[in-house]
Image: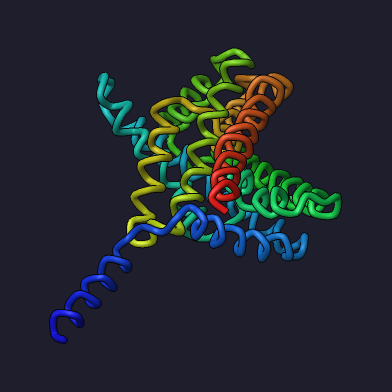
Length: 269
């Protein structure tokens, strides 16, 4: 009898420690998506604006580290630790970031392929993207046109923006696919890694930073700052960075993560 109870206890402990299945994670994100899709447009906008402003701390943190670190080969690896700050604030704070929404609301759309659902997803996308970019522009303006930051820190901001603007359209797009892929993976992993969620965000967003992968919002803060400093034209910034990064992020999040993981769950069912 004691042996049977012991076996039952061990079985329960094993079940508790077993990682959740893809379906469990899928269902958790699905429920969150339904809640997000039911939010009012004004609620989405204000949350998206907060996220756009918060993402400015990625450039600010990286720029501050870059400005005060010595000019050495290894300093790039340290300064990019700052790139994770904006993502940590936004994701842990449950603010609306466009690239998170390349996964979350897509799952209900893949489950219920209807015109009304598509319109609702596009509503969420449009509001959040505009709000994120407005927030990014506000931070960029402050960084470029006020004395909040010392001149040598502003110089670091300009260098970060120039680096983002260097690649050709197709390269930025391809790098955007990797960024969208990684951000969507963060969203996929967070429901499982509740106790280590901070590390998941930090590590995967750090990879985006050191890989120069193009994130439409974080990168727009950087390139908008360059435009406000009159070191790049607005059409060049929007056409050669924001647009290809946006396309790449959507492909990486929707097709690679949302599509494949949804297909996996459907196949299991």
